Amino acid sequence: MPDTTFKNRRILVVDDEERMVRFIRLNLEHDGFIVMEAFRGTQAIDKIRTGMPDLVLLDVMMPDLDGFEVLRMVREISNLPVIMLTAKGEEDDRIRGLELGADDYITKPFSPRELVSRVKAVLRRTESTAGNLHGLINVDERLKIDFDRHEVWLDNKLVSLRPTEYRLLYHLVQNAGWVITHDQILSNVWGYEYRDQPHYVRLYINYLRKKLEEDPANPKYILTERGTGYRFVDYQRKSNEQTVP
Image 1 (cartoon, helix red, strand yellow):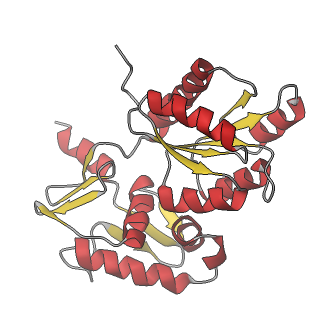
Image 2: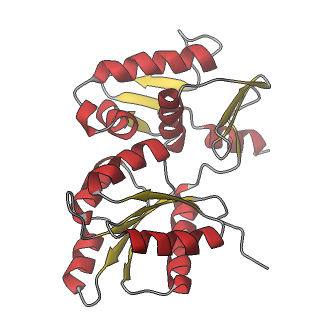
């Protein structure tokens, strides 16, 4: 019986060799993963921001930004799981990748079985410690979110969110209970080139509050941490407190 534990997890494959990307795609899709593709480092950064993958398979050698530079940029803003793809015998590359924050590495050439096994192992490890945003999230009796279906429900009615509003909500909920700085939000939601545009964050936070909060002037979901950034309510902690006798 096939393992469906990680069915529909989004994997971003970053490699400038189209043949390699096709090989990886076929094997991951066979196991129920959703695969996104990028063939350059800059394209990878954009796909990470807009596609919100659950894991990145990142080749070291690319024509514009190499894998190390992409990894460094990712680690400035996110703990997104990253597996580096390195050439056979390049021990220095593996060590450097791990030092920069890679979660694992796979040496080329590799078998389909090894590929899928490594991906599942890293997902299992990271999701067990950091939680995940899969399935229906019950924030409270009013607000329900299903990031797999890209649906937000408020008082049992579907809420229409624009793509940028949805990405902003995703990153807030992904870090529920933790403060996210303006720079982190800008880099994750809009991209590195917008890091000097803090008014974008304030504007879209207001848009989200108007759509989700009962009283936008006194929010209970999206909280302001003055001088720092924003924090989504720690719904998991509240839920646990309610169940303790």
